Image (cartoon, rainbow, N blue to C red; front, side):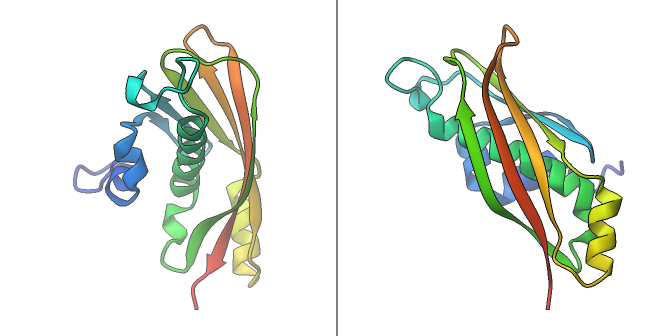
Length: 150
């Protein structure tokens, strides 16, 4: 990647204030997968001393956005990526830093083909939230769309 082009993490940190507020760390970003970390910060703890559900939701949604930008960044001139709906399940108590791993649920080429055909494609991104011991503390499924620019 050229040094003059910002990374997906830098772009999201610059344009999405919650990414900066929560001090999210971008560990990996590719068109197939993104991995973000939420450091353990007492300002964002809940009543049981772990990361607040809202902070974990934002972490997972941000990871999904990172993989979407990595997969479809070359389409931004003609389409806007938007989250359509999301569902999250909290599975186990999270303590300490947590990591969200987002994976694209459909091949990017299929999504772009729908866009090329004049459609407004929808596609899922699945996210697993884990704590340091590897236990899955939450799972999110978020559906995104590429809205053609008019």
